[in-house]
Image (tube, rainbow, N blue to C red):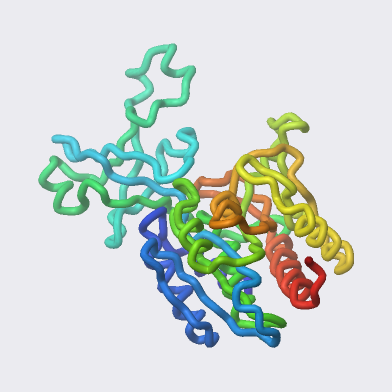
Length: 344
């Protein structure tokens, strides 16, 4: 089931350029489903699934495997770790969070200077990243170096919780929801040939998608993503982007891409025909792998479906389970529509 797959994927650790555990999981599922698979030099997992209608380079579905995370950049004499962020992480969500380092899962806590040692002016501002550190319980540099190293990665601890009106809290919903939908679709009988690209390093600049699209050379691409909701009470109405539970987000534009008008219109029409609730972005922000895919070679026509996610890029991302199901249904109907010739 889609929800079970998503939970399994969110439980895996795979920050940008360290996506191997996620890739291995998806690779096993894709092989069992009979897909032809390959891993390119960047680490993208590219899976070709033959369908009822031959169209080897017509359509590519794309979702990124990586999540935001941390990377160790210095170990102090006292055994603390200074770090940088992998991807866009709001510094306000870092303080006091539990993290795990590397493949060994070394536990740590993000700390900062005690509040009674700060000035009144410092207390008015979000701490700079340079003022934060990871405490792994080491007494000195030697003890810390026995557990980790400069260049090691860190991920948030994120318990997976269902709560409220079918809401899900987890880390890495962006973009394990896209990966979950794609692997579930790949395991179905498809009406046409489809290439599924599970990409790397999206969070640090849509780097993997460019290579994946360059090698596949699709005519059309559908990007499956998570996007920031910004629908909380403190947000002015004109700055809210979308709402969890409002259905798949079908963007006509975001911060990096103007989407293909015909694909946008088809996705909206399909949602209406199938009785699937849908929404679009009310405030243009963010970006997806579409940025890289669209600009590959002579150009690729791109559309997107996203899940509205609160507290994106944090240990406690929140989204609506109904939206996941509707994205999966709409993506399958889109494949059917392309196979039926409903797109020029």
